[in-house]
Amino acid sequence: MRALVLSFSIAAVVHGTSDAQRSPTLGGADRIRITEAFCLVDTLGDRLWPGGSSAPFAVLLITPDRGFLVRHPKPTPDFVPIGGDALLGAPMWSRPRRFDVGLLASLPAVGEEPTIVIGQPEDTAAKTSTRRVLTLVHEHFHRLRYSRPDYYPGVNRLGLARGGRQGRWMLNYPFPYGKPEVQAQFARMCALLDEAIRQKRLSRPEMPAWRRASALRPTGCHAGLKACTTLNARERRGSAD
Ligand SMILES: [Zn+2]
Image 1 (tube, protein in one colour):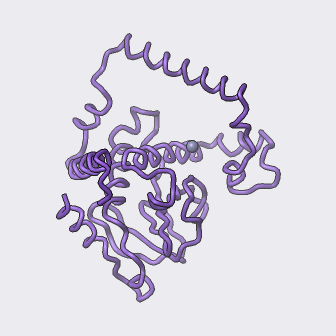
Image 2 (image 1 turned 180 degrees about the horizontal axis):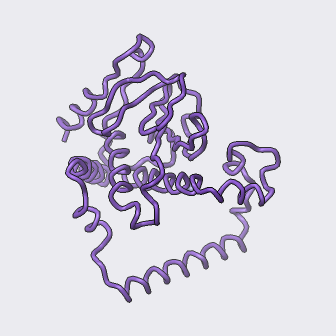
Image 3 (image 1 turned 60 degrees about the vertical axis):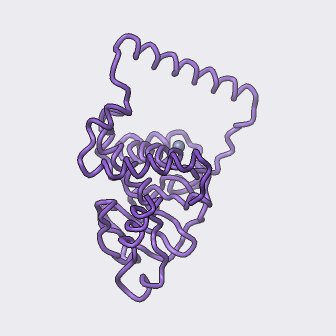
């Protein structure tokens, strides 16, 4: 595994302009997690949600010095191309960091295109492999909603932005998360949703989602799955390397 991660890290060494050459490499472990999230959505996206794989899965990874962009359809001119990444299966770009290193959200971070902006594990709440992969998939779901024609008109009709732009107001909105009645209603909603899913499973027994995902994976996803499973096992053992 060490050899695998090392080879990924070497592959991620940045080439290009002198500016890019000074930038740090994109860590091998996080490239594995991002690849895993891409594979999950590419493989299961339309089964999890109609049109789930139709929206671009653009990710901007924030390191202390730079932002690394992947799978973005229209990078802005401030990004420097740093070559294709064999593991991620896509070209990458980088620019000096602009966003907070702890950010974890989907927003029009690069031009008008909604992009998933995610800091490194040590700077965000998504520190473990499973949490990071599922967080990326969760953020992609926001991305999918943004791409629907009714989304922004519907949000504007709510009249909650109070002058905020680009959806950032949602991140800071003073929602009463701490109110006991809100928490009770949310718990009730979760219980009902859980029950609905349970009933659907009982009426239509199926192969577990993870097994379907594994069976459906394109060949290129298997290396990512194996590497991600190894990362998960290492994290359960509490090893930091
Ligand atoms: Zn969310």
